Length: 233
Length: 295
Image: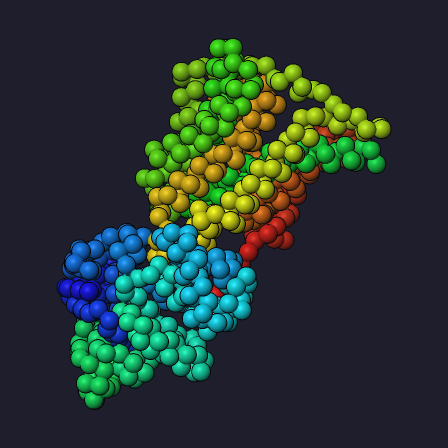
């Protein structure tokens, strides 16, 4: 469904990504792990159209979407839950969700709002609250729900467990399981490598902008040589 | 008491026009961090059209829509010709670009229309007053205040209740994330300029009526008042812009009435001293909203 090949992105003289390639198949949960500064966020940002690409191609659903504007990538069916959630703090929960569904028709948007309120009960409780007043865990659920509002074919999440209390980290991984059982396709960037490898069908290990290992979750968990990569940085 | 009430109405009338101008400045600033020093051109271009229209025997009934429509089109045109080329550039580049637009438009009028003052008639009811007891109120002020209330209510509805309004607010709060959600950058920026132009058009109707004449640099005072009011209110805050406009209008009128007769001409100077004091104690303006990141 998603195919990234030979992606190179530079910040000045520094390469944030070097010849990075990955694929995500329909219905798969794919993890992207690696230490801080490995280029995980840059990779997602490049796919989503937020960051400029130097070389490489990105194909999604059979279409070339390399260096396409973020609003067009979203319309192609690829949604990103950005790092640090980046919810609209001075807008209400409902308004945040509506923006997430801006590409859908009004009737469908209303159905999706109901669906999200069922999937995330905490959001229903805070429906008319300014999103800036929510806790980190609630905000993360809102960020994910907001991305789901566009009915994406593939949802990318950047560090969904970042800065959350352990019990909320559990919640995020439960949520990924729920979304998987709904047949959704997911690409997740995580620093919490062990948890991610347990949750993912397949994973890629990124270090210094390069893909250094790939395989199923259980295969990678057994690679003791990668241990430094998982915990390093 | 009567005098105070009269001054308050006078100040609110003035302040309403500033508020509309400031809101237009704030809408554009919020979306692309452009402090638009060409905002006054949304008054001069419709202003010269007003002069032209009266030369051709139009009446205010047809000139008012002409002013509003031409302000919206001017705003969109300036965005298309100038600002769309510097999107995403540094704030200072945007600021200089807006100065450039102002000087080019002013020079254009100087070259092709001339420096001479171009007069046109004010509406018949312009100097009318209504009395209630000892209170004498200008009809003009009441009309301005009434129209402003309706326009602000409409703008609030637009921003709170329509998808365009939500998109505009989302983009103002975090442009990249809004695009990630599918908000089209072109549409939202053009929409912001159209709204800014519409608000300037309404303010322009009153400004142009009150002036009764047009000159190539006539856009500078309304631009300055709009930008100042937006700064007073706290740049980026739309409520702040409206509040800033009202405060500025009231401050002008009240100071003029309170200052001793000999130094009344220094009203503007005193207003600027008050603004300087405000920024010493509240650098972000009256309603600055700090961005809080929660984890």
